Length: 362
Image (cartoon, rainbow, N blue to C red; front, side, top):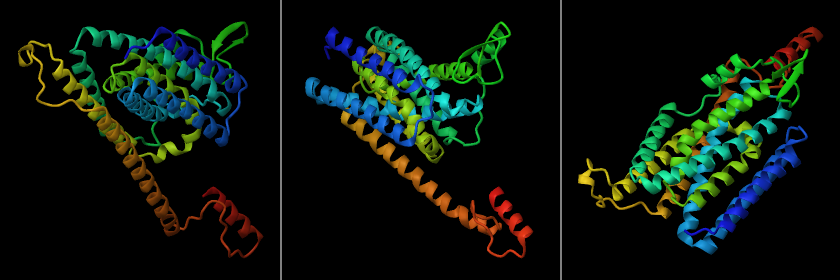
């Protein structure tokens, strides 16, 4: 796929422009976005990503169009999984709702910059060393095993600070309380960083870990650097809006980790098969290519990704519905009342007040 320099320039300019628009139009004035605002802008960013894919179909052909959509859907799915960690970070550092947009946008910008570097390094490695596909495949298969072993996300999880954050706290003076959406504050003539800045560093360091499985996964679906970059960029651009849209639904996607494990294992196997086809390692088949196993076509990759995500999402929602249906019966068996429900029988004003207080507490 031969992409002219001017197409690269327009794409990068468009992505930077959307980031700037996000900051000026939504983040510069701190506020907690409504569900309607989050849904509207999520739909707009998904629409832009789909439109870009249709343009790839029109000008580069179905092969590259399919590769882009497979990559975009996979990266978007991994981004949703990353949101679990973002929720834990926000809760751990007590980031005010009105300031969460700012942290997310800066974190996404850093992630995009970081992944661009990873993409360029990965593309250069693939160009010069065919054995890199073995490495990428092994990383994805191992990540898939970790995902499956985790068994999903527990709502009671707590974020554990990594070595980077502990070092920052030792080196830089930090306030215990937030100061609006400010990253630093001057108190008694001394400059401090706020918990908001610590949360941003936490998200940035988490992005480095996310890139370890994200970049090999996309290279397993397409080796076209332009498509890898575009799929990553468009999957990240709408992540801030998606956070506020599905924040309350994340704990309901209990089987998402299993679905992602299947997808990552599948792409990992695809990478290993491709590595065998381009094998140059002397200790594997004498350095000769191994073509006994056919390459996995793009259409099959896209089908496996879509079916896996649909099945795991529907299974998660079905599981959540069953849990919710069992909860009223369990509460009734223990004498609990639903929120706001007051026992009908009260003998006097004191008993009535006590009953209402108990109902509210429950």
